[in-house]
Length: 74
Image (cartoon, one colour):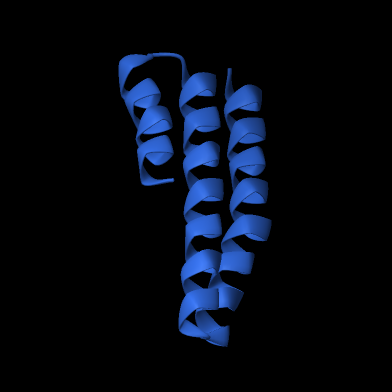
């Protein structure tokens, strides 16, 4: 999973298009949320699991709001 996390990071650095960067960062946030959920299950830590769920739910919505703001500015 950590290797799969590096692919969108490389893509966001290599590409100059802002939409590709937003997609790559949304992909990273989703993968990090899943990693946090996995670790929280292993550690039996409910607070960390709630943070992972919050990242999955609100993180992508935040990227959609940023995308709409950038779209209206252009």
